Image: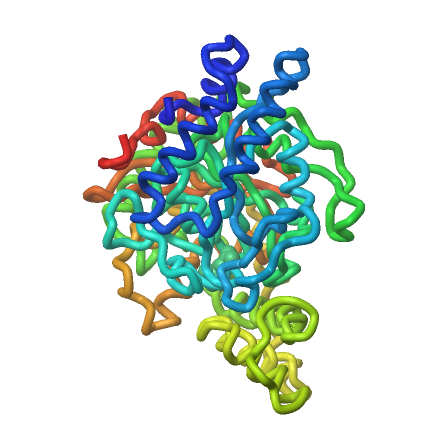
Length: 484
Ligand code: GLN
């Protein structure tokens, strides 16, 4: 039963084949069995899950059930959940119990979803391998010696191992798509502003966006339906109606214009991955799509621009962790300066400190114009590249990441190599456009993801395109060994 999609589970609940309570108990027992080895949960909210399931079953018996009523879910530990520890993968928030729900958490609950727990992640979502977490690395269900990707590594591993039917993630530079690719699942990064950031702990506010991670595009559409929409508590949330994502899934893709950016196939891309992407593109041709080469000339500037903008914003956002108001505080501080510096020094990990230092430097007088302003200009050029591309085609496709899941520890001593694993994903964040990663095959035992990038607010089309591919293929149905 754990291998069923949300759509199938929802039908079973509606047919009274099982209750939400039974379903929830099943996933809780799978979590007990497998989550130690994967290290994907920071917190399991067993009591809350059972209570949520009872509420869902009661709603259903009164005829008040929607498609997500009674379906279990887990949140990346970056979303505040009232009364539940919300650590953001950091020692500095290890003792933090959120006093309120993030809008995303609130909406999932309102849709009747059952909270299984909170998922491990890179500290403050800074990382591409889940190795910067205070709670230790997550292991990839396809290969225990490999990383699951990051920063939503716990989310991707938990969904791939069938410990939860779906999870939430956040994507600042690729953190939904790259782990989805490494773990063989489907992950959608929505348009900036489509999903509320209220209560989602901020890393780089102009780039961060929450989204669904699930096994299929159809399931992602269902969860997205609950997550998306205007929120007056988030000033960057966009007041625009939310389409019925499920209703658009089966639209024909005959005549779809696919652009293949040549920059995605230049040096650094593994050949076997390139071949799998080519064959996925062929599959789209068979479904009626037209394919044309295209160029995003400024894409090579995306990683350098991102590593100025993101650290700059993080240095401002993380100044709130001062040891005074909430979170970790050092023992017996001598004075206020000592309290600040030791609380932060002891509370943050090495990668977070590196980013704060880079960001503070880039924003300092004298360097602001040279670095920050310049990076913002490059960001404009990158947005223009996408604008030009979408005047010619409907969607851009390419690999999600330049490699499959790499080994644990393989890149921890080389931050630049680690940063380059987001080379294909960061552009969409800098421009704010939506993108989805779907499984398109394997190199050896490890999954490979293909990324589809759409124009602003094209989520329903991305989900439609992904769904049509998944109806014609079965890569998304593969299950890692040992989790049957
Ligand atoms: N890997 C990128 C980083 O370390 C992106 C992280 C993310 O999307 N949250 O910043």
